[in-house]
Image (cartoon, rainbow, N blue to C red; front, side, top):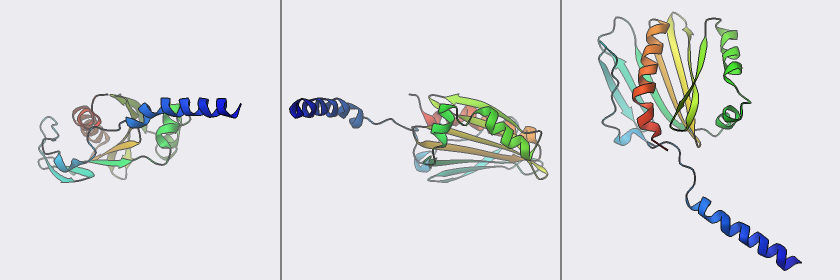
Length: 172
């Protein structure tokens, strides 16, 4: 009997090898070091960028007030992705937490090439703030946009989400 159990265990272990040989992939871009072609385009605005391996910062040169967009790459090791994918941490829960700090806060779900997350719009002192969290197989992209108004912050964040996130996430 113990040989049958050992044989079944060996068959199971061998069947798992192909999965181990090709683990799930996170984002297509793991570092911004080679991301020289990434730029942010928002109508009427001229952004300059500063690039580090895990961060790209865009600053608007011709905006009336402060407008900036930061993209940060990291690993998600705190279980946030699993809680979000399972529904344990739903959009409604995230929005309730945000509304407890700012009644005008809004949250919406986003999904790009298998990556999931949310984008928020809220106040930050006298500024508008938009935060995006996007997860895929343990990789995390955060987009933070700050501007003189919530609308401008959200417009800039959505431009980064639409233009840059698909490049960073990559197709499945």
